Each structure stands twice: as structure tokens, then as C-alpha cells.
Amino acid sequence: MNIKRFFAVFKARNIEFFRDKSSLGWNLIFPVLLLIGFSFIFSGDGRSAYKVGIINAAVEGVTQATDKQYPFKKIRFIDYITYESIDAAKNKLNRHTIDLVIEPSSSQYWVNNESAKSYLVEKIFSSQLDGYTRLETSGKKIRYVDWVLPGILGMNMMFSCLFGVGYVIVRYRKNAVLKRLKATPLSAFEFVSAQLLSRLFIVMFMSIVVYSGCNLLFNFFMIGSYFDLIIIGMLGAFCLISLGLLVASRSKSEELIGGLLNLTSWPMMMLSGVWFSLEGAPSALKTFADFLPLTHLVAGARKIITEGATLSDISYHVISLLVMSIVFLSLGAYFFSWNTER
Amino acid sequence: MSVAICVEALTKKYKDVIAVNDISFNVKQGHCFGLLGPNGAGKTTTIEIMEGIIAASSGSVVYKNQDKEVDNNISQQIGIQFQHTALQDFLTVKETLNLFAAFYQHTLAQKEIIELCDLSDFLDRDNRLLSGGQRQRLLLALALINDPEIIFLDEPTTGLDPHARRNFWQLIKNIKAQNKTIILTTHYMDEAEQLCDDIVIMDQGKIIEAGTPHQLLNKHFKDVFIYLPEKQVPSTLVEQNQWSTLSGRVEISTSDVEKTLAMLMENKVSLEGLHVKSANLDDLFLHLTGHSLRE
Image 1 (cartoon, each protein chain N blue to C red):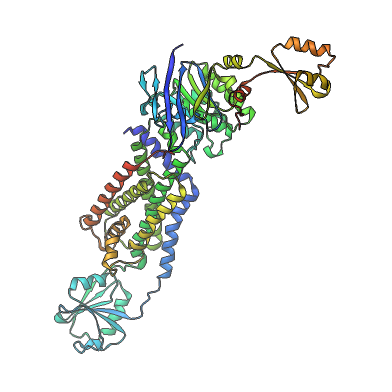
Image 2: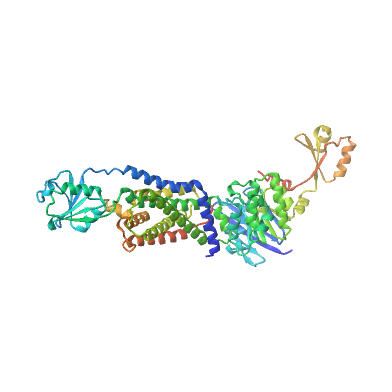
């Protein structure tokens, strides 16, 4: 590995990217447009009823309002959700998923100070909760836009990594840029690692710019560490770039690589939990999704953002991404060809 | 003069094509060596094997000054200009020079290379905006950037206008004057006549003739051609001597120009518009293969 040669290719690739205004613009505008679009589509609350959590260690689930056990259940048009643990219920209350938590056994109830709906529900129930101790909690609401943010950023990273590496290498190979480079002392390893790190730098730079820019607009929910978020982002991007290298390792045809990259990216776009949660999906689908790098990137980032998870909390995703990266890179290096012979 | 590269019994087979078929030749140190032939003759395959870009099916290429067979490491010592090369988009000429300079241990000073290849007028221009001639000059500069002793030029002037070609020839002559060895492929015979000290003519993967341009022409053509407007030459004279007429001109092939001219004057033929031409490499190729080089 010659650092001078590596850095020359790294720099040249970065210049090429940042001077290609159309591609640069697309990389910036596409995720922002998606985020703005989704925030509008899902800006209405979508539910008319209020939700109240009831702590009952015995049962869990939505119960009927006609339940005679608790007098306050006489109030109609309220969804009552039963929780087994107080922590789970309070967590939902903190995130504005439910509006009030009542624990009949200890005669306590909780309201969320930062939620307007929690305030209203408390007023509605005030006559029914005589003798109950009022407890407060607080927490910002997780909007859909907060939830979908890691998905959209992850998807944008995926496209940038797969197409930015895969397509570019095939184009270089087809128009003999690779052949010209091979005729110099530059080694395949130096070339490939420069491409990889250049794309990693570009993807992280663009994602941070998009996140920071949109944050001014949306004031995103974030309770985890930005450092951890950047680490999982880099691991995910690295894994996706390795996948792009593998897909592009031999092909000389732009049509073929376009097809292969679409074949790789579409399942991830649909099944990696970008748009909707996979929690309720069939287990076969979930197992399949576990083999997709984007699944681990999005799930890991989402846990950091919405649950404040640390890297060790999401070690499953971290390790999955690392293992996949090693497999993709080894196969890509094994199959890599400067110029497929006739 | 010492031998720089020795090519011995070189063969390259693709699935169902023999691109290069058992060829041998030597490239002399400090010479411009021309590999001539029509499209598809095997020229590019031959020099790409010599450059270490592709592997031969059999045979050897030995760099005599290093006393070793060609391998990947030869790239530090040689300069290559490919026939078809795309340059990285969005980089300027100067940035492209910097990029390639970073690949080598030893490089020419950038100022020197800019002067040598006459790049100063478009140094800050994007690669995509270069004209054909400017592009070829940049590609030549990239081939020279590591100050190589041996330079490979694969059809360097294809697609250039006559003016740009002549400029390019002058650049190559300047490089030659520095006692560098040049291996040139071309299908332009005038280019080979201008630049090459030795030539090898290839057709269908085989060498069909080798030598200096002068030697080859002397060997195959004793005659020169005299052309006169058809209307000045009596048709009886044309029939008698079995001269051919070609687009309004009579072509007289002769080994003794003086005698033929005397004979024409004896017959009161006006010599106005007379044109004398000796055979060139185009004629030689046609003579050797029965088909024109540009076919």
C-alpha cells in the first residue's frame, strides 16, 4: 500500500463527485424532498380517540370500554391499552404514543407534561380519578418523520454506496479508465481502497449535511449519542460499499450492472424497515431481512435515535454489519478484474 | 545498436481467434519501431502483451536492459498511450497530471512535461472539453510523466486532423531526439514513413514483412510511377505499352525514368502536368497483402 498513490486516487474521486453538480444536487435534494413529503403526509394525527394505558400485571392488550372492573372506563371513545409493566407504559407515555397511564392497584396515574393531549385527557378523567396520586413525566413526541428519518437517510446512503461505487467502477472499466490505471504502478488494492474510502467520506459528509440541514427544519427527536449514530452510519455505509464493489467486481456492461444494482437495492428498500416496522412481519421475511445490510443500519440507527441505545445495546447489528462487510470485501477482492478479457 | 526488447515466438489465442500467431522481432534501443497493419491485424494485442497488460498464450517478451521477462512491475519503467482511453471526468488537465505523477517513484518536472507536450494553453480545462489534438497531447504527457526509456504509442494520431497530426509528429520527433525507444502502432503509412526507423508489417496475426522503410521499398519496388493527363497521350501509345489509365490519368510504371521521358518526348507527348511518384508503404502493403491498408 503506497499512501501517495492511494491518496491521489482518493482525492481525484472526491473532486469528480463534488464537481458533478447534477449528481451532487440529487444526493442532497432527494432525501430532503422525501422527508418533507412524509412530514406533510403524516402531519395529521390520524387517530381521533385518546389512548390510556392501564397497568395490570395479569393481562396485556386492548380491552373493551365496557369493562366493569374500573369505574373510569365508563368514559367512551377512549382506547384502553393494558400493560404488564409500568416502565413499558411510561415509555409509551414519554413518546406521546399514549396519553395517560393509570395504575389502579396503587391508585396512581401519570401525565406527560409536554403533551397537550395528555393535559386534555387528564381534564376528562379528573372526576373519575379522585383519590389517585398525580405523577408527572415528560418527553418529546416521536413523530413519523423522526421514525422514518434513519430509514430515508439509510436508503439514500444505500443508493449512493451501491450506485456510486458499482456504477462508477463499471463505467471506468468499460471506457478503459481502469485499463489506463492498470498500466501504472497503482495496485488493485490501492485503487479499490481509495474508491471505498472516498465513497465513505462522501456518503458520511452528505448524510451529515442532510441531517443537520433538515434538523433546522424538523428539530429531530434524538436521545442517543451522535457519536454512536455516526459509527453505525459508517459501518453501514462501509458494508454497502463493499456490496457495491462485489456486484461491480467483474462486469463491463452498464446495463447489466444497472440491473444487478436494482436487484440488490430494491429488496432492501422494501424489506429493511425503511418505511414501516417489520415487527409484525412473518418470521421468514424477518429472517430474510436480517441478511440485508440496510436492515441493520436502519434498525441500529433507529434504536440510537428513539431509544437512546448505545453501541453495545445494538451489538447484534454492529457485528452483523462487520461480518457482512468482511464477506463482501473478500469476495469482491477475489473476483475483482481490471479489465474482463474478451 | 543494442536491443531494448526481444519478442520471441509470441502467440495470443482468444476462444476461437488467434489474434497473434507466433511472431518474433527485436526493438532496438533509441529507435522508433513501427508496428503496421490494418485494423484487426493484432497490433494492439501485441503491444499490450509487451506492456504487461495482457498475458501471452505462449512465447516471451524480454526487456534486455533489465534482462527479465515482462511483468506487472515493468510499469515503473515504461510509458503507455492507449488507443482508447477515457480520462476521469471533472478533472482538469493539471489535476490529471498530478494524479498520474503520484503513481510513480520518479517523474519529470511538471513544467518540463507541460512544455514538451505543449499543454500550457489548456492546463485548467476540464478533460471533457479538450479537442482531439489536445487530448492526444495530454495522453502523451501521461505516457511520458515517469520519464520512461521505452514509450508505447498505440495509434496516437487516429482521428486527428492533418494539422494536429503534423504537430503530434513533431512532438514524437522531439522525444526521439532524447534517445528514447518508441514502439508505435499505426495504420497510417505516411506516419510510419515520417517517424519509424524499423517497421514490421502485420496482417491476420502474422508478420508479413520487416525491415527499414527504405529497405522494404527498395526490395519490392524497382519502378517509379509517372502520371500524365490522358488527353496528352495518344491512345495507340497507351495500348502499345500496356499502360493503365486511371481517373483521367495515364499511369506509366518504369524502372528508368530518363529513358521513358525521352521516349515520350520522341513521340511529341506534352509533359505538361507530369507527376512522378515513387512507391510508398501504402503501395507496399497493397503489394504484399492484395488489399489496401485502410480497408
